[in-house]
Image (cartoon, rainbow, N blue to C red):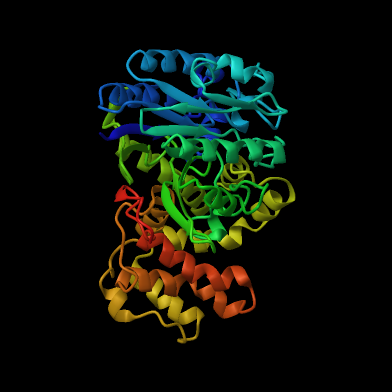
Length: 467
């Protein structure tokens, strides 16, 4: 008999009481891949969708609140209790749930305020006690007071829910004692004849390409956590954090394989609801999103979140193409580009503005000619390949690349396709000028990984296969 369960991650619930939707909020909202004011509506629609599905249990892999605000936690917990009336719910918390930078934020008028009450990490276990700790077979409470636990999801499947906030700020992982407990639980599941599914917030494997996912996204201790977990007997780990939807696999030198399913944020594109079926040794995933949600009318979830994602680029590009230097600088500050860097960009906006403006108007045929020009005709960019997309706007290509990064290549391209060859040729241009720079040398490999989607279909596949 098969077991059907569901994983979601990064609900980042943001209470509407934390803003009046003024200028400060608009800058903040326009610089984030995920939504803010809409989170409650998206969560409600997703929970309703899950509640009426045939799943047997729901797992939430951390960052349940936007930034640890007490009011956001309280509103989210009420939604969880409502879902729990239909389905068992198990969650872990992560650094956003206790505002690890000690800088909570509210947005009123043109001001960002920092006097928002939060929940400290010591209180989180008790606050969410009904969603895992209460049902736990075994618990490990870390020095921060947060909890890892195991729970049976069915007669065949056991969940290993790991809180990997090893040291708090900027360092995810596990202490030696914590890791010893993890290994004991893996061994116990094998002894009990259970298929064990791991869940934690941070990644154990890089994905897409190390350029994207290696910076602060993976557990820091132990650095070879994926290998150690795999060799201890864990075969599956469901994670969040990066907001990127992607399946990655590692086979260790000892021949043990672990598969990481990075579940995208529920409140940002592609709003991943990952349905997992465990049938004996066969494990499959089927990823969907709630079809609609209600927010100032009925919204198509996927379309709305896709357009919000594109805003990450558009909210920089189009102000950059205009003469409004102050708006351009404000948008850059919202993205975290502040201080001298922001001042320098503002000072030379007049010089970079024509380039940005060109990008907003250019088509592939223009980009083809420009690449040939700046590489003095030496680029391997093919006119035949370019002809297939001759009149496609460059901005459409930029949007598509962003969608592929975050969404796990929902529409993959073959490595030997005109699309892939074009993209690799364009990103190879910096290598022409900076030949010894490792980042520039690796850009073509990154581009290929982006558009091909990797070894798995990230949405619908059997992940128990070794590939």
